[in-house]
Length: 353
Length: 215
Image (tube, rainbow over all chains, first blue to last red):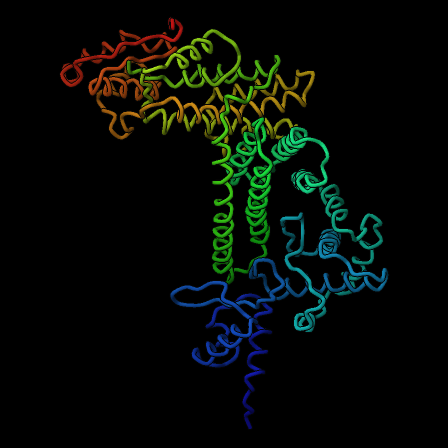
């Protein structure tokens, strides 16, 4: 006798399938053994319940994902990558809690997991995300629905050994900012260190007792430090970065710079950083994408990069207009012999055009 | 008077070295009064933006090299846009940095000068240029080719001077430049050695040199 699946079972089946990554409605229909209209009605119901949403809509198909998809940007990594990454995150969190009796911050969890993946040479993606290197997924121990789906990988014993070794490292304090700083130092990530310093400086503005001039000078130096540490692998986005730095420097050099302009600089930096690290995250993911998911991966990448670009554009245009209000001739060129030497070199280059 | 500006003039004006040409450029601009300053579209939309872009790449290369000794200069993709003189400039900047007593200050100054220069050039165009003339697509090919014969391999100068000659035939202008070597009366007269060009451009603009400028 054939037993019909209940609507609840079908919806569960769809959600379990989407745990493996975003899927097109055709794939979902095949998986649950239903025709399109039936599948679509279940997907609509799940959408109304807030359990799924469309990540892509084309003329021919819709691609769905779980709204609680733990993978960043819902990048279509295969099931094994997703499962193993989440398993590592879950084990670290549980072990930390068991041994130290406190919850591990999300940042610290990611930093420790990266150490595990690297020290054990596990073939899993590590993304250069906005707060340094992370795994490809976030972990939420309160999401029982996801927790139930995390199975044990074949190399469980090796992974557990590895986690134990990494947790012996006393530099892992579990405190978010210390974990970030430790990772940036350990893996030589000066661009991230510079960004961290700049962010701290912005945050210190409210506490800052010194005058605006001194604060501006501090921001200028931190921006220069960021420029000097700009990584070659981000070269494709250098013109965006340079556009931000040069406009911000002009605003900061303006002796009449107003406090609200700092907010514009800060906001633009946040959007720029988001754009840069989305770019790197997708680049770092690319090699781990199965052939059959390459097209979907590219579509998701394009969608995200366009979105970040749009956000950034609004901010940089505002910063540019503030910079353009500044008369750059009111800002003196640096004084001294080295300044003259540099300008003479520029002039020689021009005269040899 | 309508002055047609060579590309070097805005840059002299934007620098702060204290040399003779810079002083002359500053005097010239500050005595603008009712004079009209013209820039051709080729300089405003193509040559100057390209030059500024190359300055950004020079700064990128400099910053990469001083931060990482192992970085091979000009190994970035964007450095493909650099001309040989840009590479010489980058190398000399790095050499000067190596010799600098206060390296930190040298880096700060370099970054500030390159950033400020970009902003100043853009501001100069906005504030002092009254008209951008002769769309690049409308530069007369025969006229440009004639000038290029004598200016080879400097296509930029050929386009710029051709723009000046064309605009002069719409309304009188005077060219102002610091390039005494190439931008000469004799060069302009070559245009009239071609009968068709003579017919089309019967009048040639006067050239004044920044070096000789008296307010």
